[in-house]
Length: 155
Image (cartoon, rainbow, N blue to C red; front, side, top):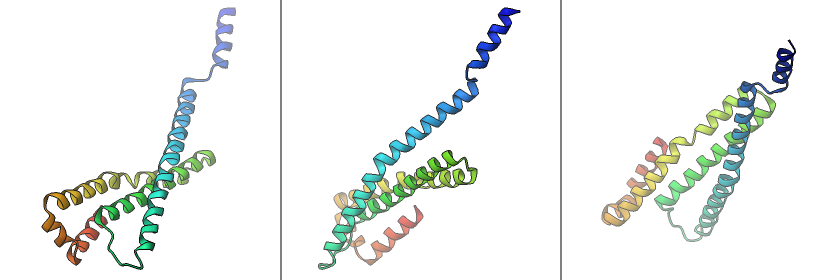
């Protein structure tokens, strides 16, 4: 009888495996979120700040934004949306609001499409500039800007 009672008291003092798994998962999520915020937020803000400075300087001498820069700025904005989603999810995990957690999840996964397609569009832009320069120069006109905007909207 004493063996059973001592083993029961030992089991009661140990954290159940399901709780331990939930706690570990929470720490991993918070660590991933904080790392994402710490790495992507400054980078995206720097890219957008440099783009804004370049745009402000070019107001005196009008020049169009290159397609690669345009795709890069869109990608930076999409990454900021994802960072905002991580911030919302962290707030939801501390406040334990399921609705806020769902909003954060959808906002976090929003940039996943752009994370793949905007670098592809930038690569296609560079490919056209190097391998097919005549087509690239034609696309710099009004028709090419419309195509660029349609591709960006589709992504």
